[in-house]
Length: 589
Image (cartoon, rainbow, N blue to C red; front, side, top):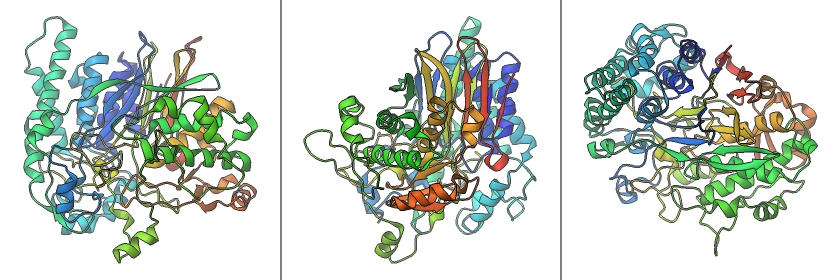
C-alpha cells in the first residue's frame, strides 16, 4: 500500500512495490518525484524526517534528515545584519540541506534497488514534464513580482516564458534532472564492493559523497555569497560553506514513544515537535471515550485545551538539547497538567516547570501588535513555508508519504523545505535552499536559539503506531504547527472511535492557533480555534460559548493526512489519503 499528497508520487511508489521493491525503495522513489511535482511544498534543498520499522526488527527508528545551522549562523552575525528575527525567506534562513542525503541513506541501508532505478521516475518527470498543479501555478503567480524584480534565477526556472504557467501545462526541470543523472553516474563510477549488495551500497555511498562535496555543493556555496532579497525587505548574503555541506550526514536515531489506550505511538525526539503529540495523548488518556470525539462540543473543547498545554511545553522546552521527557510524559506530571483543563477556553501560554525555575518564553505577539511595533502591516506571504492563515486559508505547506509492503516493512515520512518561494533558485541546479532556521530565535536564553551546529526545532512529525510491539499504522500530514493537531484528531477517531481510515481523514477538522507560530513572523492568536464549517453550527456555537474565538475555514479546508495500515495477524493492508483538494491519493493491492 502507498499513500501520499500527490497522485503521481503514489503511482510511482506503487509501481516500485509491484516490481518487487520494498517499502524503502518505494518511499525513496516517491520522495524524489515529490521534489518535481510539488516544488512549492518541498525540494532537494530542504529537509525531511521519517519514522520506520523493518520486517526483521519492529522497533521504530527515526530517519533524521533535518539539517543544522551553518557554522557561521550566529546570533551576533544576524544582529549585525540589522535583524531582530531570522527571515522567512532567503539564504540566511537556510539550514544545511539534508533531505537528499537522508533519502539516499535510507536506500543504502534499508533498500534493495539500484539508485538509477529509484531515480528514474523523478528524472523522467523532470525531463519530459508533468501537468503542473493549479496550486503550483498559483504560488508562482503569487511570487512572480519577487521573481522578476529580485530573484531572476527563479523567474528563469519557473517562468521561462515570462509569465506563470497555466494549470495543467507541462512543467519541466531539466537542470534538476541533470543533477540526478550526475548522482547516478557518480555511483556507477565507484569501485565495486564485491558482493552484489555491497556493490549497490558502495554506489549509493558514492552518490551521497558527490551530493555533499561535488558540483551541487560548489554551486550552492558560490550562489549564496551574492546578497539577495530576504523577507525583511533587505538584501543579505548567506553563510553556508563547503565544509558545512561536506560534513552534513543524515543518520538513524531511536524513536521517542508513548502509550495511549493500549497502543504505542512513536515520534521524533524533542528536536522536533513530535513529543507534543505524545503529551497531548497522555493528557487525554484521563478522559472517557465519549469525551474525545472531535465532532462534539465536549470533545473539540477538550482536545483544543490539551493541545494548548502540549504546545506550550513545545515552545518552552523543546530544542536540540537535553529535554526531560521522562518527567514531561510521566503519569504524575500529566495528571497535574490535566487538572488545568476546565470547561472554559484558556487564552494563556501555560508551560510546565521542568526544573527549579520557569522556562523563558518566546515573544508572545499578535499580528496587530507586531505590525504596530514595526510600523507597517505584516505581509503573511513572507514565510518560506506559509502554512495556514489564521482565517484558515492555506498558504502552502509540506508533503507526506506512507508505504507498507507485503513483508511488513513500513515507513511514514514528511519531506519539506526548499519550496520554490523560499529562496532564489540556484542556477544549473533547478532548486533553491530551505528556510528552516526561521524556527530559531535570536535570543540565547531560549532552547530554540540560533546556534551553529544545532538543529532548528522542526515541525516535521510523522507517526508510527504499534500494537503489542508490532507496527500497524503509519500516518502523517503537512501543515506546520497543525501537523500533530490534525494527526491527533485522526488517531482519536481511529484508535478510540473505531472509524475506518478514510472516514477518519475526511471527518471535520480543527486546530488551535493559541501558541507562537513556528514560521515567520512568529505571531500567536490566543484563544483562536480554526474549524471546518462541517463541524456544525451547534458545536461551533458551543465552542464560542466556552470562550473560544472560532474562525470558520470552509467545509473542506484543513488537513492533508495520509496513512497505511497492516494487520499483523492476517497481513491485510489498508491505506487512505486526503480528499481535500483532490490531490492526495492512496493505492495498493
